[in-house]
Structure formats: C-alpha cells, structure tokens
Length: 136
Image (cartoon, rainbow, N blue to C red; front, side, top):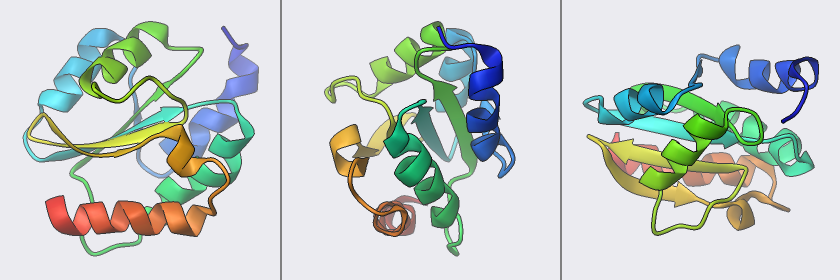
C-alpha cells in the first residue's frame, strides 16, 4: 500500500475534473450498475499513469459526447475496489493504469496498460472520444 500523502495529488488529478473515487467493492458494484455510461479509470503511481493515462482521460472529456458517470479506483491502494472493478473487466487481464467504458453495466470498450504506455495523452484521448461517440 502506498502512503496517502504520496497518492493524494495523483487522486486529485482525476477528482478535480469530476471523477468519483471508489474505495469499496460495493461502491464499484453500484457505480457500474448505474444506467447509462460509466468510465472507470484504474489509477496508478506509475509514470505512464501520470504522463499518459490521467492526462488522456482529462482531454477525452473535451468532447460533445461523454460518459454519464466518471469513477476511479487506485491500484495498490484501494485493493478491494480495484479487484472488484477488474472483475467487471474480464476477459482482460488486470493492468494498471487501465480504462473501461461500461454501458448499462456491460463492458463496451477497454484500454489496457499496453494501449496506454508509450502513447501520448492525445492518442489515448482520441481513442476514448471514439468510444464515447459510439456508446454515449
């Protein structure tokens, strides 16, 4: 588990733009069960989360269509919530950072770490925007 003061600014990268933090399995279950679309970002302390994933998520929201619900879990910190969220992302293996778009509880789009690592935030944002335009 990472110290709270270390992850606080990393959490705030997403909560400051409207993401709700989920800390329990029940909270994840309730979020994914919501009607409409839900973007789940599995946040991480790694460099690709800071340079690519979180900025990509932020830029993706500059779009006419966007998810109804924005939520995040933090890998290595909120273990119960992260494990529950990853359970909804099967058949994709656990990875962090990662991003999943759900529509009415069904997984409709997935970005795994290998889609994020080494790619610019703008490319990640465009990928997400395409998913929003199709599903939101």
